Length: 361
Image (cartoon, rainbow, N blue to C red; front, side, top):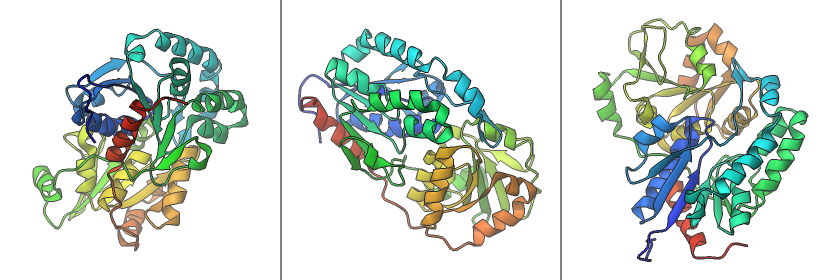
């Protein structure tokens, strides 16, 4: 599908700052829309260095915090500190919406695209602009799962979401039936470089067993590496996407291209973030998920993958106590490694463009 109007369509992307995976998936859709002739403004904050590396150079990046943050600690989410952080959330959210309603790049947008920034639904209603959301969960669900104390914020976010024109959900999504005008799409991932090419670049032998610790930017996993004790073993190469204190775990040279290293690995060890899950499923890579005890999204992701035999799931502390035994289990467990179709970004771009020519509800 191509944009046929002589004037380029303006698309505004509102992207959650909670985790690098949100930025990666939305960048795939934004890059696809640029290929189709759209003019894109990509709005996020903390992953700005990542966004500048993975977005098409024609895309404008607007730095603006979009409100939602979780306070993490070792093993999951710190509920009390997160709750304290959310005490004035609704007030801040309405201030953010007011700022956005007067922002030129919002007013000039023909379409709003987001992952789980529910306030996009309010902008859509107020400005009579279509808004498409692409994600596998929402904040109102996550906050309700964390603690009943978040009910007021959860209800507010659910009301905001009601303004979304269409919700697109990839495989292994949580409660997609709750969302208005929802449609399933395929996985959204980047196309990796050839496995052999990356292994050669890393200096690995063809028969080496490559094991990747994929933690993203989470503080939980930054602390994890100070506890891991892996000895150098013949034929096993340990990689990580974060700096480590172990001489036996090598940091990958280009963490912003983590998908290349996932594709080249024999086993990925992660906390079960949806971005890492998507890439292991798309490339057919073995996955060991170490569950964080108090993180509903990661727990739900792990449950769904375990149910369909797409990953080995274990407790984080069990791994710290005996890493090699669990690595052996993960390497030898018979699991479904058939690659899953991953053209969801193309589907999302095409479905999004349809809304530009249609009036909003």
